[in-house]
Image (cartoon, rainbow, N blue to C red; front, side):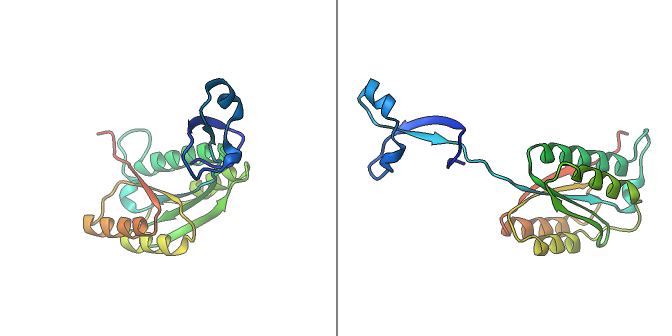
Length: 181
């Protein structure tokens, strides 16, 4: 996004109606043309990590189960987001949201997320429509929703839940966790 910031991005040609305060007068003095300075706007996003904690995630033929791998991916995404000062929340679900770690951008919030994800076990079935509906209803601001799952659920229910999130203008990323065999 272009906006107010100290991070200069580029010049663009002046268009009638542009704010004259944004004209780069030094460039004008060299080129005799008007150019507008554009700056990159700093934005803070909200990242919501939804980790599948259903019994199917307990499967694994290697050193990690799908659940362990999913929690590791969620922790890595939380670390990357927190380093950019973005707010991160995490939830573990099966037929409902079992544990919810509220969003925060504090640097020590990673420890809270790691502790919350490591305490849980993968049990139960998956009701993806109910979980995604509840997630969509509980989020008041646009967010990046990361769904970490093996996607062993009804495809129509999955698409219905994803459509609810997209209708509310959330960006959705799906991390499909599979066993290595």
